[in-house]
Image (tube, rainbow, N blue to C red):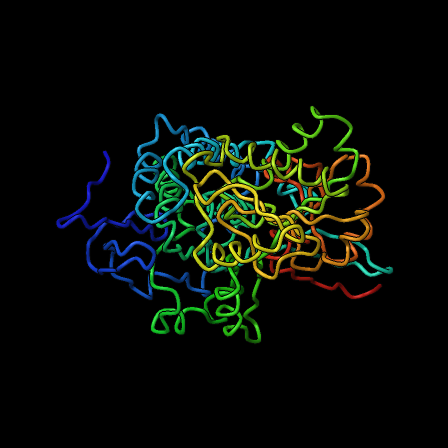
Length: 470
């Protein structure tokens, strides 16, 4: 049964503490983005930690049992049958900007993160094999016998709210680690994490994995909460997703014995070779692929392209820009066509000024939510957003490499045959992921690195026992 708003239109935000759902209107919060009032349970600091004097609930649970449990949870995450996901889809409209259609599509896709092949691939990619976390593994190192264990960690996760895929990824990885995990929910997604944990409680109310997770909301930066629990006496690591301010805030808690795992803010780009201009049909096809890399999650995710470097003449690049605007106006699985977001007012003012400088700059499209392009010879000084992409004309794709940094996450390349020539230089500049154009947001979860590393491997507390020689 869906929980209706409490009196005055205020929305109830559930917490889940060690597998137990808590629904109580004890604390009032005003959302910064919308001004809406939401009500949460009161925070009990003691309930947010698991004592180090005893093992966590899943520390000694066989990984095969954990995988089986996650698979059953995935079956229960059928959107049409799951009231928690349905409630989250409705409630998140009050704090998230993605819109009803995109949110529902996101929730319909969540079950796939819990599929057996995805979970096993994520474990094997990070740890080498499933049984790595099932106890002590003996090996001989330079003639000495040692036992190594990937010991379950204790982790606080500061979640990002720009896309509802962050909570399922975090929960699957946390379950694989066998550790205990506190999820700090963001103000722009206060419902997805608890919807998943409440589903876990339905499937296995006393299962060790269920009891290994808590999710709560408090206003970020609340020193009375964070200053007391972001400590090595309670947790090993703080994993933070989000923008620059969120990451910098988390960094101040770094201390001996308390490590920060940061999924930093990133910008993604596209590299489009002159092969795109073979004929008019190819231009349209490439523009459709380029649009797919821009509009997913309404360009609010790190994987969405904000800059596209295009190899071609003035007329060719302008033709591509016009085709790109047309393709951005179409609905996609995770993107809004007509009626989508628009660039913020300061950026629109900048576009008005740059539009007066033709032919050096040229603006395509209108601020009507269908999408806009600013074509230039160098990247613009601001960060495009709100379905705005900066198309940068280059004589050669090699010229674009000077603009690639460690803050560049994903790169979509056309034609894919040119990836082999570019990937080493892209990697050397700091890029973490290279795909064919149009595939930035269609990758599958499980078994691949994330932000240049293996998150579960980074979470684990690696312990070694040395045996005497002889």
